Image (cartoon, rainbow, N blue to C red; front, side, top):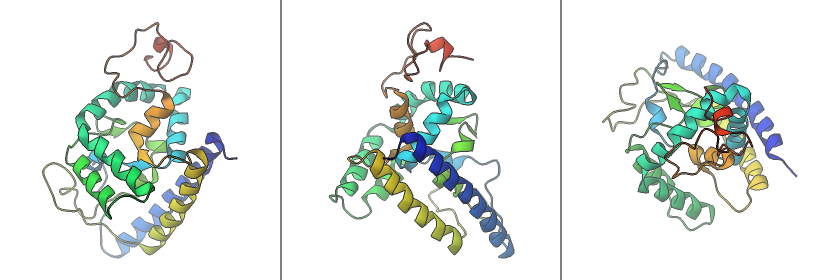
Length: 236
């Protein structure tokens, strides 16, 4: 039996390997005359990222730890706005993923739903002042996202697809990693598919999507820690 803690630890090691592969990817891109244009840009943080359970477990564990207290408080406040901003696009994505998992969906339906969600231009609930609050434990898809030469086509009203550098060793590694993560997911949530990372982490923290108002300071924290809100997600 695989525990959530075990799965989180395993995916942490996988993230180390993704970062190593990205170093090789950047070197190969430079050797081919390209420039990775992602420094200081957060346009891709408007995308809805779907993750398996192990990555959600790693992020939730980080947010429960003392080092993640400020990020946890920000997420608890930002999550309801993220849900409201996506509206029916979020529900459509949930249905598309569920249909795909159960073999009911039309080919490409998840991609269509992701594109529709992206067009809402709702910043990720983990984004604060243009910076990722969970950067150390961000999902693999965020670690491997990149644009070549310019980030001008990554956000705003642009509909062009940013140019990327296809590097076979990286893509082969990510494919193997997804297979392992899928196995961990089936062990942790055998009857459920992957989710948007904000939804998956909120579920693990016990946050309600419709809880637009913060709890009273002396009320139990909605993350399930057993502490008062002012001593947990409301601290700082």
